Amino acid sequence: MKKLLLITAVIGALGAVPLISQASPENDLKAFQGYFTERFPNVPLEEFTNGVYAIDKASREQWEAIEEFPPYEIAIEEGEEMFNTPFKNGKTYASCFRNGGIGIKSDYPYYDIEKGRVETLASAINECRTKNGEAPLKYMKGELASLVAYMAYTTRGQIIDIKIPFDQRARDAYEDGKRFFYARRGQLNMSCAHCHVDNAGNKIRADLLSPALGHLTHFPVYRSKWGSLGTAHRRFSGCNKQVRALPFKAQSPEYRNLEYFMTYMSNGLPWNGPGARK
Amino acid sequence: MRKSASSTLAAAGTLALMLGSLAIAPQAAFAEEASVVEEGKAIAFDRKKGNCLACHKMKDGTLEGNIGPALVNMADRYPDKKRLRDQIWDATKINPYTIMPPYGKHKILTEEELDKVVEFIYTR
Image 1 (cartoon, helix red, strand yellow):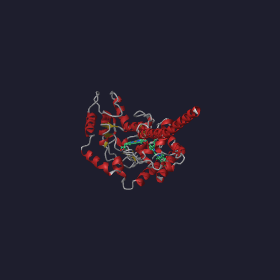
Image 2 (cartoon, rainbow over the protein chains, first blue to last red; image 1 turned 120 degrees about the vertical axis):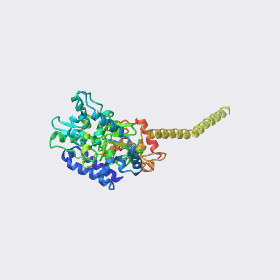
Image 3 (cartoon, rainbow over the protein chains, first blue to last red; image 1 turned 90 degrees about the vertical axis):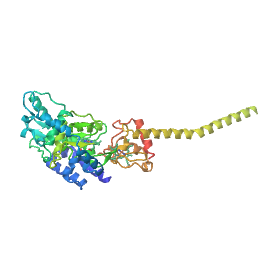
Image 4 (cartoon, protein in one colour; image 1 turned 60 degrees about the horizontal axis):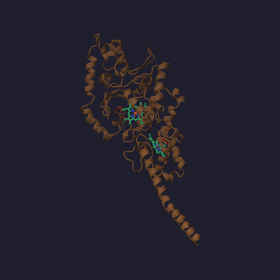
């Protein structure tokens, strides 16, 4: 218990405003990954991409059985078909992305200096559509999630290497995401870090809490609870609601910056989306 | 004589009444206390109210989480009931970094519900 309190205090201090502006992203990354590798000394770094299944033998076996006939397979196929189907103007998604859109999920999220904001793959997909005269897709689930699933699939195995360019606005976006992650929120007054840093590996009621390290490597994710695929921002929204906080919109600046911070914290781990969770 | 007899009778009646109320009073108080504890328990266990089992093990709980310490020997450990109430009303006063929700401060429970939860937790 003492140890838990101490860790909570340290994390709390990290979240305090003056330190945020002092610590560099590189130092944050070292401290963040160091905390988890020390807390879970028997879990190899790349295993953190598997959420609770990296730290819980019992549920891991069930999950491995599920992964043999992955529930997200249909979505990958649907996404691939959409990806290769020309728009009304004859062009395809391939025309909007580097390398024809294959194996490029690793390019996102990044700070777009020209637009002055964090660009995500989901928002880039919709920009591609509107640029080609197509209506944008909904951001939480459905067709867009399937497209991202296919694009994630072609990116599997690459190593996460998110950059924070030397630009004050990029740095601000990163700091904003970091502040969001450590900030108390909602009537229940909890931060993401309370559950996924301080209490990773502990149980909240019957649910084991996953470590935040590796949180966004495998999205979009098929959740049995949803009965469908969902994007990372859908999950953010759910975790906000759990603490009775008003969720933000998918692709809001808040969630983009949060995605930027959280993905950067998983630098060095492999991309392994799409994933399956309970 | 008559007067005295009637006053004796009256006195006896009063005594009977008093005895009766003495006999009944503790039972009534006990029943009332028991029902407050029961109500407190229902509030504490309700996922939409206290949901204390999300984080605390305690007697009669099921599928408890392990984020907070087990709640045992509370009456011994909190001779001052107000300290127990303070912990539940706003845990951040005692530990600024705590994950425990501030049930009173954020009006997750009403003051009345919180009192009942305190009475219940006191029996754990």
